[in-house]
Length: 376
Image (cartoon, rainbow, N blue to C red; front, side):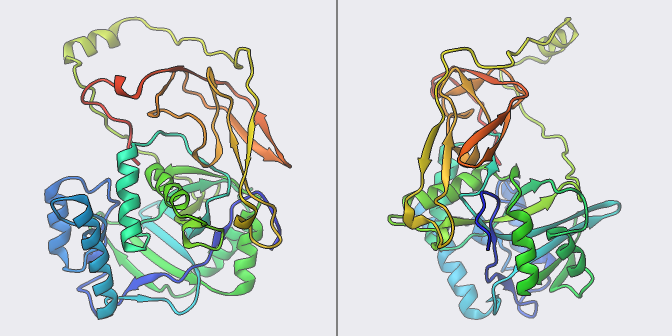
């Protein structure tokens, strides 16, 4: 395969439910771990079927170590009992959601962590460490994160493979309580896998949902001594959606603002306001980009060593790949909200500046009581 700085989505042998061992596929499905937050929501899923996956992603126990061990033991038992069976050959999986006029299709695979993936939210370190400990104990990845990328919108490359695949009978199909129909197919043909790889090798992705999961993948990779690109921890489970063909729907996320009386909030909204100007570039002195090459052993044969680009140090910050550099929630608070964007060209970063995100130092402990960084 061609050596590139783009996305590398690898096939893998997925674990799937044996439909003869569960009451229904709907009964064993669950929303992501950070959506199922209420105890009654967890109980609802647990009682839907004794093999609901919530028992793996949110096990019950008094302490984290016991929870993680319990999830690992449950996974091992389900595999031994044949509830979960591993596919015979590696595949990329085409996944579809449909409800009325809403249609989402994408590819599920193991994405190499050295690809250009752009985060735009901060993470809570404790959440990252908890999810990393769970995955490490179970030696499994239970949930894909959601990534978006943009093609030219034509039915070529990965899009053409998806369109051909959905004409075949799916591996599974079910409809969940929210009215969404779900279907899954496996892509194993070498020619189709090559077509996907050639297309995605020219793309970069944006995290649509799953910043904590992406940071977890990075943490697991960094914590394994002597980890190479051939290690399972060198990639992470993702659902990759081409938004040129299947635009994502972004719905409201409701946040709580503590210590803000309703009367004051209404008065502030009624007062005249004007947007604060944001500088189009960072003030001097400039700090250079720092190139951090990966160890030679971490690069597959025929590919150049991967690199990470660390953004200029304060007072400026731009969107960066693989979570390097300062970010909200790590002691820096953004004063401007329109991100810069950049792409890699050859061996150096090329910046297409729309506006800078100017930041000011802030101790992590200074976050107002009762507030937390966004979870995803």
